[in-house]
Length: 196
Length: 271
Image (cartoon, rainbow over all chains, first blue to last red; front, side, top):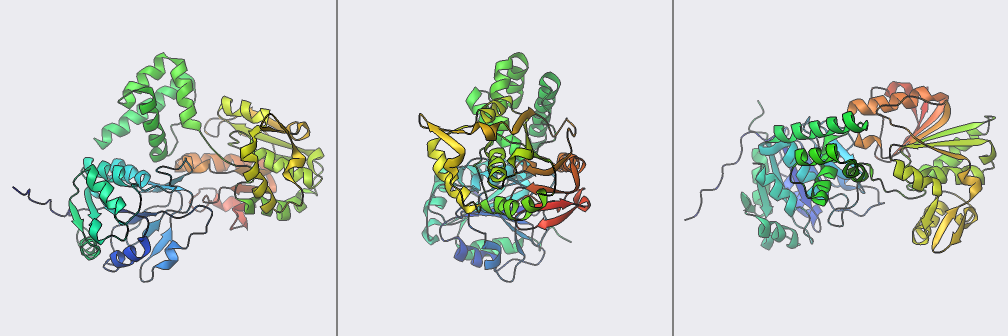
């Protein structure tokens, strides 16, 4: 018997996402459906250290910034982790950075962001894991799942680098496995709900 | 679930403060929780309250835990642009002072204070300079005072030193022996290493320069404000404050006390 899929949550306060190889093209699609007052979106994309971050400037039509330490999360804004720092979220709705060592050979690491979101936001967070050629994010997404958050993994067959989605699917069964258009449409539902 | 986790963390930090007088209560919860999570695994504890019991009854466990909570890894001349700005724009103004005092807050194992000492030496100012380098970790301070770094790290430091705008070789500042580099005594003798907590201690000197990098990001907002307040009170008028490459005074209660001096490189000047 196929279990009934979990309903998309009505109250989402934060979306966290992680992507590595193939991230830019994937995020362009995912962002294209966002409504104006979408919940804050915090994202880790693996980028080399010691390079200036160009990420926020690559996306037009959205409000994307490089995350700053103790910056308050605001609706309608996309926050990218800066190169060479981990990005975390605090329960008071603030972003934090830290310079702890690499996790999964990465700084920023997706697991660090996701695990902090699981603890601080529990069932009020949606975690999205996209294309990537390593296994970062699998543990963190499982932590979001365990804390009652809603989890989405890009279908490995549709990912330009399937390893990262596959690692998550080996670890646990997420609420949705979707292609990029499906993820776009799912995120487009947030912000039309919940916000008056 | 989340509330219980919060409670356990608060109780553990309170217990550490009451018993050992190390105050982590104002630290950023997300970051310290991650470090504690790693310690749980290492100590074979399943919960923070389990760890709390061990910490309270066994000082050796606390000392080991302190290593997890204070670990800070950095390089000499990390972010060379920061040091280049210091050399090219701050040093000329420091020349006007008969004696020069710097405070490096959160100095870890000494890489940063020695970077400043090397620049001051290359600019001919070391003889009239004193560098106060402070940290809460006694273990780090001991290592810092020794000034010994493995040669395999020195190669990377040399490249960063060059990119910081130096026309000298880093090798002029250390002696290599047994696979390690020992920072010259003339540099070490200008650095005063001492135990100081930005959470519980106060201003101890008037200085022209404060450098505190990748420390404030571990603090919550009110502890950040306490620390930047100490820096403001310690700096002389027109003194300089340098922060980490992703730290700013933008969300600080003390931002009005400072103006941007070199915005990109995170150098501020006290008004």
